[in-house]
Amino acid sequence: MTLRVGAGKACISPTEECFPFPTFGNADPRSALHDDIFTRAVVIDNGETRAAIVNFDMVSIPMYDTTKKLIAEAGGIPEDNVFMTATHNHDAPFAGSPVQGADAKQEDDLTRRIGIFTQIVLDGVKKAVEEAVSALRSAKYGFGTGESWINVNRDFQFEDGYWMQGPNFKAYADKTLAVLKFVDEEDKLIAAVLNYGCHAVLGFVAKDVDGKIKVSSDWPGYAQNYVEQRFGNGAVCVWTPAAEGNLNPVYGAGLYTFLKDGYAVSKQLPPGTAFVLMEALGGQHAIDAIKVINETCADKDTMEIKYARTEIDLPSQKAPEGADMMRNRMLVDNLLPLGPNGERPEKKLVVMEDDPEHPFKMEIKILQLGDTAWVGVPCEIYSEIGRDMKAASPCPNTVVVTHTNTHYRSYIPDKSAADHHTFQSYGAAKPGACDEYIVQGMVDLFKELK
Image (cartoon, rainbow, N blue to C red):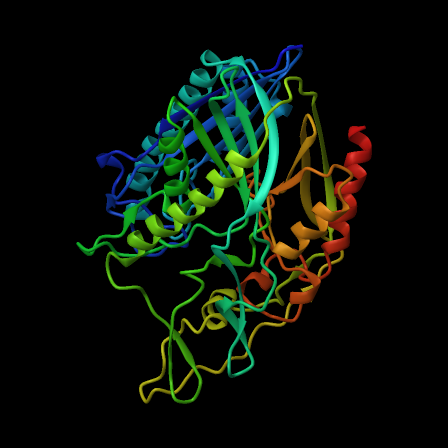
């Protein structure tokens, strides 16, 4: 049967009454809007069933179950075929639930403002999906890959022997930029779904020239907008995050002041700089994407749609009783203040304990779209694990998408980084012990899919 595809986009920027808004990580609040954030949807109809790929310019998917049901109802799509992710944009407000750390006096007002923004997001995604459905038309598709050199491994070993965030150009960083391309009967672009591994953190707690910390779509938002403007005619670009647990933008992998004893103190960019870097890096990434889009032949007009899901148990860990994990988090990246005479805090990190009685449960899902497979995981897996998943997949056109749920979120360092003891090492999943479980879980799920 003839393939039909439609795409839609809706603004979900917070309104004035939403500010000030908490920042990811409970840092200083955002008090203004720098540039709009969006939700985007691609609806695919193969004549027998429908699927949707939806993203949000946010740190995570808001109210996962509610949002998934809303998309399914708005698009006439089976809930299983709704594939959602977020760009993991650290510059966006939260939606759905209060942020930890709010005191009693702030709680009511904070809940009210979060509620307003949550409704904006829900209304927006419904609008985007309905727009995509109304735009359904005969389509062809193709899959292509290229490279984008805008990321860098962020596990860097410093002079004192400890690992922190920093640009490690020697370490592995998957540069693969994958594109699922949809065109209409006139070969005009309907949608391009991108997949690439890199954190959206350039604007995280960064101040603009007026001294305000602002909401922004960060560099993935700039990249999506650039591609859409380049092709015009209502084309939509949906960016999805690949395995990026240890990948940062090449401009923002870590900035430090180095003291005489080798101790490194984190520092911020000058006001306004981050937003310039976002636009520059987003534009560079967009150009890389446009090259892949133009080189990809979209000539297939039928598409089988399949879905499968599983939950696997991973080796887990826990902090010893009484451990101060907040202090440990600050200590890992040298974020604790120096003493009155400039002495550094003792860097004695928490030693985690195995927790075999409480395995870490992680979801794996596969949405197969024709000759492409979209493998979704909720966790921030290291780039090496994503690489191994793609290598082991029976489908040659496989992409790994992270942040596909709001449940079971955790960093998962791979076996080569098991002894790095970066801040990513202190989640519920045991670093270095999960690689084979995740890869095998995906392989077994592909067997079920067949």
